[in-house]
Image 1 (cartoon, rainbow, N blue to C red):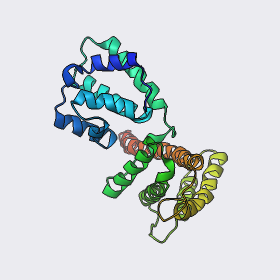
Image 2 (spheres, rainbow, N blue to C red):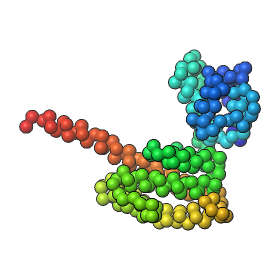
Image 3 (spheres, rainbow, N blue to C red):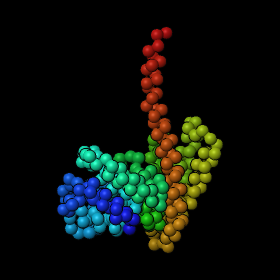
Length: 267
């Protein structure tokens, strides 16, 4: 359950205009749609009744991370639609509460576990991975995390022109990708190269975890702390890879501009 104090709850209730059972300008339908878009599900099961009653029940039932995610989305919605006019002080208080709630996640970089293509299956598995953490059940999501990493690495390899086949194991794909980055001069330090190379053997061991210690089969699943360590290691590695790919994308976008400028030089 979340640990929003009664005083902070009253601030949310005032800001979101929850008197009389309402929540902002949501209808029952748009409220459910908003919750699905924000956290992947309705909150009808948290408590029956009005939108405000269901939201109060959600605060009591759910853990800090997912409560913070929904409330942060609601604050953004209210700001975007100019529903908080004259309530700047109250909004600031609620923003600070959301920031505190969102910090309470067992995986610090959970947001990086997102699809990097529009493939439907990729988006579905990424959502399932995040839900396992939002429920604080990393051991139940190890098989989906493994599938997510395979899709992630295959997508990166394809983007870099590397040959991808279904029978090529995850660690081999990742090894080729790291080599491509190093050969292209996209990793500056030898230490970073070594860290990434160590991830190759780590991913090879991930195959065993998926096959023998996850819900992919009728296994005795891994204990919570070890599953959490795996999730955090994967999230940290993907955060770095995302930063590398974002830098490469910016360089590619700037290159044509530089070429045009050179062509305009009159000699």
